[in-house]
Amino acid sequence: LMAITSVTKGNKSIAMDYYLSGLNICRKHGIHNVERSITLNLGSLYLGNEIYEEARVYFLRAMEAYEASEKEAKNPAGLTMIYTNLVICYMKMGELDGARQYAERLKTECEPYLEEKDQVYVNCMRARFYEWIGDEKTRDRYIDDVLGRIFKKILVLDVFDDLYDFCIMLFEIRRLEEIWKIIELTGPIVAETGIANLNRKLLSLKMRYYKAKHMEEKFKESAVSFYEQTEILEKDSRSMIASMLRVRGALEQENETNRKHMQEENEKLQRRAETDP
Picture: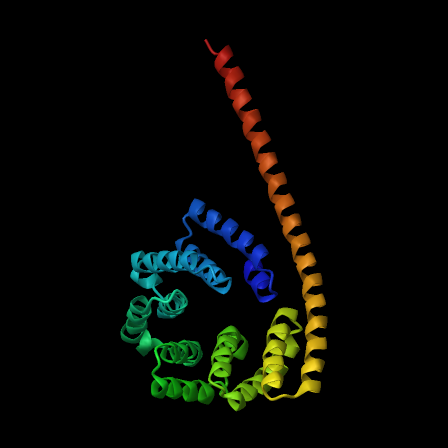
């Protein structure tokens, strides 16, 4: 939970530390379902930082863990996320065969189980995929599908990062009006969260839009707000670091207490062994 909060607030290095700590705990105690989720989240973290080879490794590990899990522990939503991220990862690495393979597996294995929210982030990826391979007709079909779904009752924040990447693609093909619709939809929701990282991402979309439309005054206003949110983000980062250090300190203290206890027990056993006939 602390790792997810750190990611949302833009503190990715802190999130990495929490995830790795959580992964070690899961492996130590055999908590396989949580381990799979953390592995997937680590892949997403590497993907977001453009470390694609490492991201692919974690996504493939998550897939292997899913395939090895008991039938009742398998969740199609989890497999959908794994396949979607693998398609994006292979796209970023420029590997068409890999991207196409997992796009097909997503369609054949997961399509019947997709819920409304899943359809949004999956079809955001599909629009980007078909833009990447130059199939404009199919790309536009998925663009229209996404735009038709996001105004229904879905949790927009759950797919905000997907919509952000979707908008970047829309900028590339000059679909400015569609971008503004997404900005208008997400703006009040993002503002309500008070999360500086999300506000900065939304402001970056506004700045791109105003620049593309040659709206200089609006661009300047957004740039000032972007700077203000950056200051808030830095303050949040310092707070998160302080929290992490406190957690680390508590863990170290507990480890030291356990170490001393074990040492005392060993010394008792040693003395008993020396006195026993």
